[in-house]
Amino acid sequence: MIRVLIADDQTIVRAGLSVILGAEADLDVVGEAADGAEAIALTRSLRPDVVCMDIRMPGTDGIAATRAISADADLDTEVLVLTTFDIDDDVFAALEAGAAGFLLKGADEATLVAAIRSVAAGEGTLDQRLTRRILREFTARRRAPQPQTALPVALTEREHDVLALLAEGLSNNEIAARLYVEPTTVKYHLAQILQKTGARDRLQAVLWGIRTGAIEVR
Image (cartoon, rainbow, N blue to C red; front, side, top):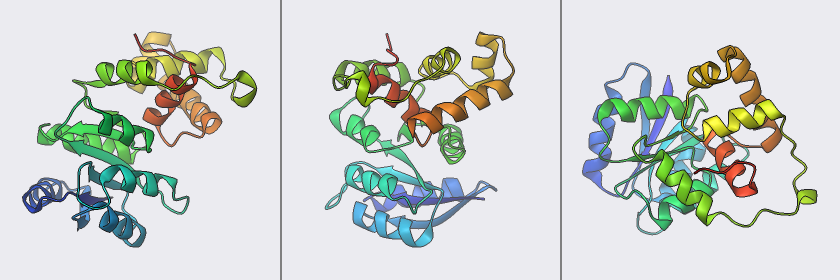
C-alpha cells in the first residue's frame, strides 16, 4: 500500500482527492492537513509515502512544508505538488525545496494516480504538458555553476546520457530503446546517478544536472 497525506487549505479539495485516491486498491489516505505546519506535523507522526501538497496555504505554505519534509533525514516521504498555477516562481521554489513531482490540479484522475505511484517509486513526475517548458525555464533561471573544484561528482559518459534523456521526460524503457541497452542497465545507471548526486529521485537528479550545468534543456 502507498500511504498518502493530502495537504490543502480547501476542505472540498481535500475531500475530493480523498474520495478519488481512496477508490484505488493500492492507495491509502492516512490523513489530511489544512496548512503547511499541520502537513509537517502529520508527516512526522503518520510517516506517509507521499504528500500531495498545495503550494499556497495560509501560515506555513507548501514550499516551506516541502523544504522541511525533504530535509528531514528521518523521513522517507516524497512530496507531489498540486497547484492551479503552471509556470510561476512558486513552482520553481517548490522544486528547489525538494518536491519530487509537480501536477496541475486540473489533471484527470488517472494522471493523478499514476503520478502518486511514480513519486512513491522514487521516479518523480512533472505534468507532461509542461515538463519541457518547466525545465527550459529552470535552465534559464539556474544559478551560475560553482567552480569544478566544488563539484566532486563525476558522471560517466553513459550516466550523462541517461541524465540528459531523463530531462526529456523519458521512461526507463524509452531510454533503454534510445541507447540500445536493457532497461535493467538504465536502472543501474540511474541508481549510480542518484548515489553520486545525492538526489532523492529522478526529478531532483535532473534539477541537479541543470543547476550544475551538467545538462542543458533546449
